[in-house]
Image 1: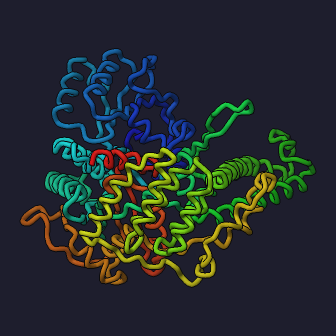
Image 2: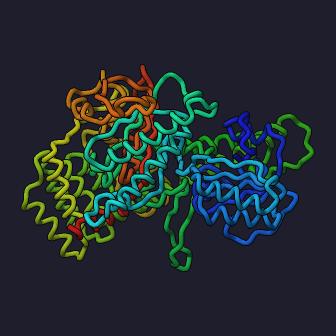
Length: 622
């Protein structure tokens, strides 16, 4: 799009930016498209693509009559009118118009009519539906940014119209994601919930697309390989506990403890005079540390940041020794020195500086994480959630409630929800009453629990249980902890905390959790790799609906057949989380002989706090 929709542009942006002869241009966005772009491109990337100015379509913009403009906006009447206004004012030399998703026929005709009245239709060079109405933060993770979906779909006061409209929006968003992956998948979904409605609506849209474009060169059918992808649409109720679990994975912890949205981490901090402020850290696409460590357990990532810092220091001191300066900042990149050695050093300086900046960012994030871990005793919650059926766990949880802290009440409630939903035979009634009394005594809202209790009853009635299995291989078994006590982590003085992350490694290295699949991964394995799945999980997924949008005649759904797939797109209706995303990726990458590619998406990637608010409302309504 930034290269005016040329098809031969290299998908590697760096290469494309370097190879193309740049044509300077203006980029005009709206609020939605700004969100779509900001998670994958930075201002510097836009500049490399020849974008000198980018601004919102609603703002007053100075005319640049000699410069072409690329519009990337939502398909709304307001945006169409604003583009026509710009055309009337002769604001730019050429207009390249791109809509985030499909511009419907009526609006397209209105756009054409208005443009023809201006007498400047020759200036409209392109009009494209880009099918990009979703947010991507990683190559295999996306969100439709539809917060509150679970509440809307499960609220007794939601009208049929509200539910139908939301399911249409979700189906449209999924259609956009599939268009971007250029595939017409087999669709699988459980019956009797929002996932079924979404799957049916999406199946109809894809079927219409297949019929309408069968004879067109633009059809995805022309580009798709023979190997079919499977789209697995699931309801949030498949696994409620994972929305509240405390994870020990670096990325999950950052999302849980701080704010991670559109590849920006926001950490609360205080200024020197004690005022509340925020620090923001951008996770760039070239952030080598995040790419290599975000999926690792916190202790391992902490060890790696120390190693990265040591490696940087060694390289910096080696360069300083060779060039005879005491500090790299004393080097003059503009010096006229002709020595090959100095030229090599000067070339490496920008790379070293970028590496140091990334390491510093993660050192700061780890320091902030450790501070939160200590003040809220987050390790203890992770510990009790590992073994919900143990009476010692319940006793340990009651001890945690008596820690005298009120800054971790949400964490306490989350852990209780996890224990309640994951215990095999349910929790003793006196234990539940004691926990409820604790929250009531602390004036903490437990409306959410009313909904959780009903959900557990429903789960027992439907008997929807999936068998977990170990993801452990021989090389990892020594790292898994039999003893999950984290007491070694927090007998720390303030001074040791300030000493960096290294001093903690010895205390937390033995605390890696046992690697095992969670319910969503069990479903995906049963559908993608039935030969290696358990009979129990296969029986659960055999009852799922099966749609093939390529079959345009006869029955639209048919009895599923068990077959293997190497690629899948897994989508959760009602909110997703990083724990599921990481568990799916771990499973996919553990298939050494037959590697799988799994993309994960949801209506929104919801924080545990936000999701608690949603079900609190449902608890209040019931």
